[in-house]
Image 1 (tube, protein in one colour):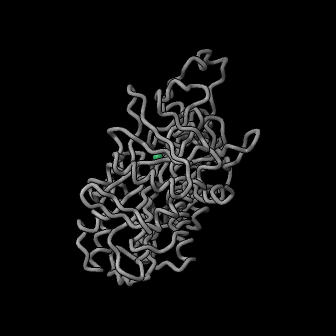
Image 2 (cartoon, protein in one colour; image 1 turned 60 degrees about the horizontal axis):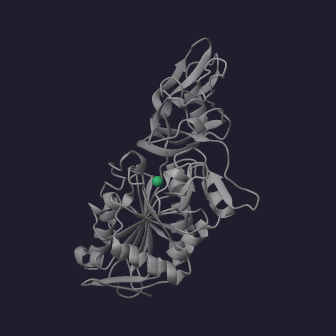
Image 3 (tube, helix red, strand yellow; image 1 turned 90 degrees about the vertical axis):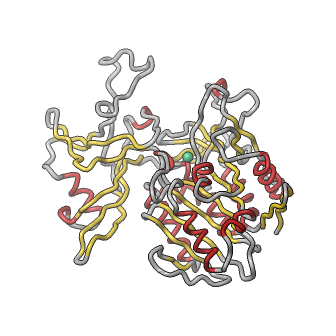
Length: 426
Ligand code: ZN
């Protein structure tokens, strides 16, 4: 659990999350590949490649021949407030605030009255072009103040948050023009005038923690989906070699529809699979028939105060193990459900089922979207949590370990399909 919390606290933005994983891959002897260069892949080799600094794919080539791929996909982004380009809002009075907009389907209320800061990346001018620098302003910089109950007696009767009015963070009083850029430039170690572009997001200063009478819960920012990303990554790193190519994929922009070059609706994952197949003279379609994907994105646990929102017969519990998601918006079908269930049984990991209440749509996932570019047997799963899309989400302390356990076995397996028979072996 401390390892997960440590990873989360070092990953205040999607760029930091991808960079932290890349750093661990480097430390473990993985070779960085570049999409714009030739890939000299060799049996026994370990590699990773990034796109846009916010998507990452890591894979290993087995020493012998391989038949297909064992893939996990999770996402690096989370709903939050995005800082606009002309960020400083001077006034009213001497207040200086930041101009932000909603990124993804966020819960607004949890962002109020908490210390916040900004994280992301800046693009800095160099002698021969532009370079990327990660930024985390490591101080309590911002806060979005609530309106006092005396001024809005209906505040507790259900409040509609207007992003342009209610969700505007306060930074200071009577600040000089350009103060925000100066703070960002200092964190980036550059001159404010050299910043040519930014991708900055608000993030919570509160660190993750374990709590409860028997320490059964973990709460932290961005559990959706960095908890799944972390669990899949650990499984990937710890798995034994099999006659398949294990692929860990982290994709961006899931919370805004995945329609970017670094999102699940881009070609990143398909491009990686294509290049691996090409390097070893494999037909991609043939290899995909012997491949399996776990699309891992957090799931809803039954809410203690609102159990009525859960489906009558699908009621995931925290610390009850990974959840298989069923429904028309998910990639799961009977076959992929069965394969993943068999895997959980073999890994001695409990498994739960989720289906949206029949009058609720639920969220999207990576599974269906990525299948339109790279089609293969896919199961949508997640770890059960509360308060999804809050800036401080809650999950069970045991579930990360369950995911690691089953993903370690998954990545050390081979999948084959022949006429409705599925083989899953070492
Ligand atoms: Zn998610």
